[in-house]
Amino acid sequence: MGTSWIASDAEHARERLVELAAGLPEVTVLPPSEYGHTAVVLGGRRFAWLTVDHHDDGRLALRVGTTREEQRELLAEDPVRFFVPSYDGAQGWVGMLVDPASDPDWGHAAELLEAAWRRRAPKRAQRALDEARTAQQGDAAPS
Image 1 (cartoon, rainbow, N blue to C red):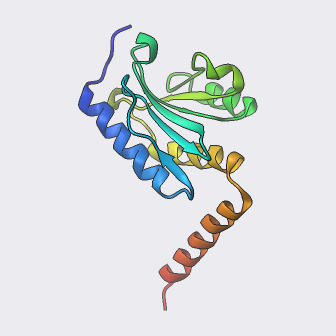
Image 2 (cartoon, rainbow, N blue to C red):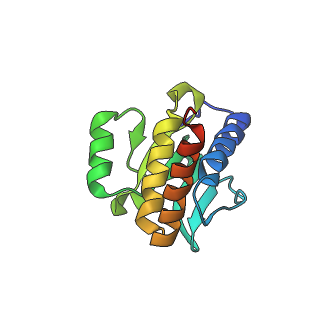
């Protein structure tokens, strides 16, 4: 399968992923692997990753751990942008194309990333995120 993206597109997607993950407590974004994939981990367990032409599939994709129900809903909602990835798709993961031609919705990607994080994050980390957001909203309130 041919690709519709170039190396700078993969770097841009990686930068966006790092930005999104930076807001989630206790998350580490690992450096790209020798194959160019970037894993997002919590407590040593991957819950998302950016894959770059994974096993020559031609895709630049964000793969996120979802539930099987979410996976079905996303595929039904937008079967062009979302796909069931090889290997981890059987566990409910979903792939989201993030190459420029696919017009990625990074806001939606952020929601998927946070949902996957919340399924794995300890309650204290979730509270910390929620409290930080509440404080930010309070700071942004007009006086």
